[in-house]
Length: 606
Image (cartoon, rainbow, N blue to C red; front, side, top):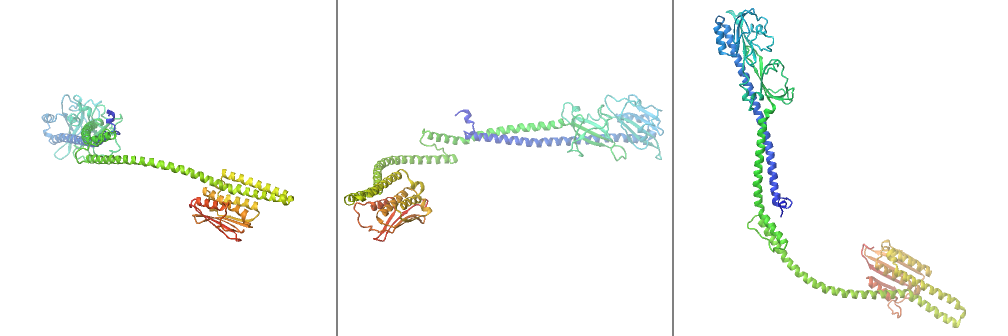
């Protein structure tokens, strides 16, 4: 067997079983990997979203606490106006390095004292009455955000690339609670880089996540320099719009970010948050770890499926080896290379099947031996029967020749014998007339010529009927009707003819014999009966018998009396016996004659 045949499932049960196991293992492993991978991918994405939400909330909380603590420190300094000295400023800046400058402002907006780190933005004696942070801060504690540094000559330059976060302002009050000024500070804070490594495993965390602070109107107040002062333009996906947790948003440049936001509320007595902290991560980074995990699950499942298929193939090969040996044994028996089937040991289905095949083979071999013996005996008997059949066939052919001779004899009797007898009678009459009355000779010669002519016509008719078969072509009823019509025309007698439709259709070889018998009976009436009226009837009796009745009112005769030299009645009885019909002739002197013929026929023939 070739290598291709061994792995062709159409020619090897083991190959088909192995291919089935491989297909099932591959299908189940792929389906399981896709299903488990999809679940794992969704779980990883959900975990990432929860981590991002927690980081955002933590960042917002940290920022709120940090700003609130600094605002509390300024408020505490404002409540102790007498202790607000340059040493206090130094302590505040030492405790909170993000405070770039601190200033004491009178109620009219003039700067009473200031402390600037790395160069001052506010000078003592200058006025800030027109600044928005002052007008708000003298009424209540206030947090402000610097939207732009352009044109602000009084603002100190930021350190490095750190964004300027905003102003913190707390009002100053006297012992009666009257506002007499305000304490202000400029806050600059390096806050985002310390949180980004927790959100991504990328080599450069800044490329993986983005941290922003938005004001109440959605404007970006802290973030990359190119985004500050612009509104956030992310559009939430339809299935996540309105969600309070992290959601995917589409940007104008086609990128998709996973965005989480948390409020920053640090102002005293303020119900609404001052800012919102926002963390965003690109969509591809969100799904990177999930897709990698799904691919690992897919390949692990495929490897497990391959191992399963290999183990299953080895097991299938081991299980089908017994069946394979049984197949080879049966094939060897079929090629006549062995006489018995090798039955493997054991009680499993293969052993039972092999035992059943062995029993069937033994039975077949025994039956084959018996069949060979019977065949030999049958051949001997066939040879004997063949010789017997040949002998019977020879006798049958001789009997057929005898029957044909008898038929021809009857036909000659019915045609030529009658004609010759009539001509003989005419010749005898002519001889007597020649001797006693020559004057009548001419008329009798004409009559003799007519008799000879009629005999010739009858002979031709008989020959035609031998060559043609009117009964087979038209049925017994139609043939009898035409023969009776010719009889009436020839004899001038009165007559009646009747045939049942069912009986008239009868037309096998027996119908021909009945037709000949009817013609013979009519000729006898014409020659001997001296009748005036003839009646012929053909009828079906039930569904099994056919009756023919021919009656005349002639002189009659004795049917039992011998008639030497006349064979008409003998021929009628012979023909009736040949077709198995019952014939009865009733006749008495001067009482007419009745011929009755009854034939048993099959129902389908009538």
